[in-house]
Image 1: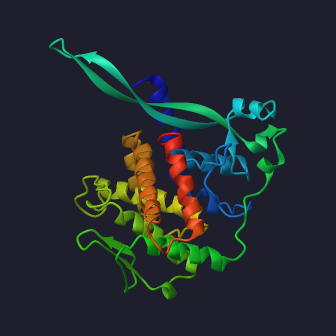
Image 2: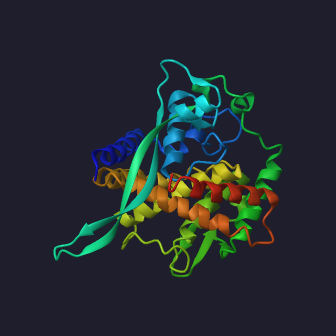
Image 3: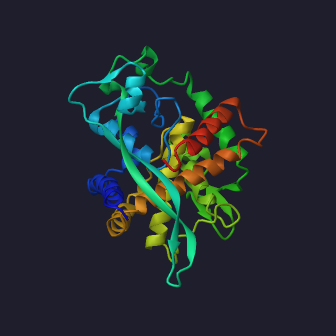
Length: 319
């Protein structure tokens, strides 16, 4: 593993550890900070394609730390191509690019085989608020949904299209792996409709881990062990991204606060853990999104989001 790759893992993980030690979840920062630039969105590239995976967390954290309100980012060169320039003294933000190369290696017997080598590189981007001379559309605020009803109807259509088995009863929200169903309290049990859909986003992420879907397993054996904490981290990250995409406010559930200590233990023992969790979360989001394409309930707005996510996932690998 190269020093650069180690440094990328360390820099990102240490930032998230620092947030967690303050009781702050990096992926919840935009909402916790009372962001005022319209609804929360994913960070966007210069061409409007949303970032994915770990880059979402990294740029959300940068937004909050540096008080940016614009969602769009670009490299120094991309700014120059738009006949704009980064202001003197501005410091860029780290994003990562994951890919792989194939090399021919010789084994102990002298035989040559092709080996795929995965690597990760960091590069620097700037928020458009750090750049002068861009076309006016780059400085505009994100579009604000006109009514809350429209936003909630959109979330309803999205989750209905997944065809997950959702059973409304009791006062707890959870996913049963053995029974392959989601249990949810009725919507009336939540303080508002957004909290209901945000909680459902979390549980539908757990639903994607079933062997007949994404077959995600961290070796968990008992409630509260390291594998359990890893799965909860994936669900937290994916639900935050879904909430941003669907224009709803995440539900910060009190029962998840207990996981912070476990997440810290996982992250401190493995600098790659947050990258792996973000990658699994991205797959879960894309899986749920893909279900919209064949569902009659999906709205045109859903289709637009899915098209953007699909384009983004192929544009820059896992980033």
